[in-house]
Image (cartoon, rainbow, N blue to C red; front, side, top):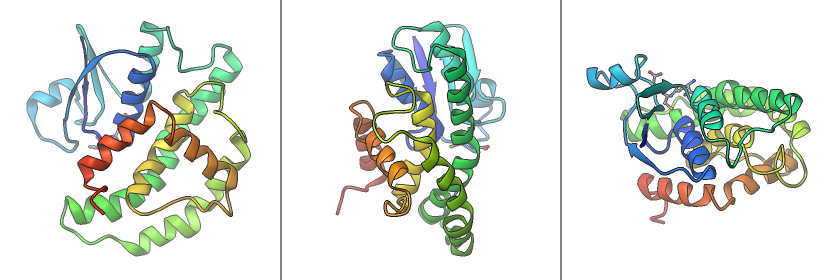
Length: 215
Ligand SMILES: N[C@@H](CCC(=O)N[C@@H](CS)C(=O)NCC(=O)O)C(=O)O
């Protein structure tokens, strides 16, 4: 039995949820919040971060490590390209999505959503403005130059596509969308990823959880 620890709505947990779904693997999800001091969870995730994954006796942390494990252990329905050149490119996009993209796009979500809703603090709009107007544009210029005009990065939807888009899903929950007139290819790419049959239901469940469908 596979157990995924981590609350829905985290960009990293979503990435693992989607990989499990693409691979058709059934799993149990423990809705573990991050930043916990729970000593029981620290035995599973020594840094207290989500996601963590348990598969039988094996416990592992970090979405990139988890996705690579799932690819090795359950190779049916691959989520990485098979040739080494494209696999290296996919890992780069995964890394970019999990670091700089997340830092900026999930940063908007953290300020505009988590701080007011969960932490009862005001959003730092100066920081948000800097992210949107100064820090994201050069990254979006790069992403615009990398994504295809149709389909996904390496054929079928995989880890690279999910990792690049996951934090923009969080940003969309905080009323930020990529400007389609300035970055038409990347904007359309986000649309394709988020309307994929495996991604849609996960986002619908998150929207219900965050109360985003109540008008
Ligand atoms: N590199 C990690 C990052 C995971 C991560 O930072 N998760 C956040 C929640 S979205 C977290 O647990 N933060 C708590 C902390 O940093 O202590 C991964 O890819 O899984």
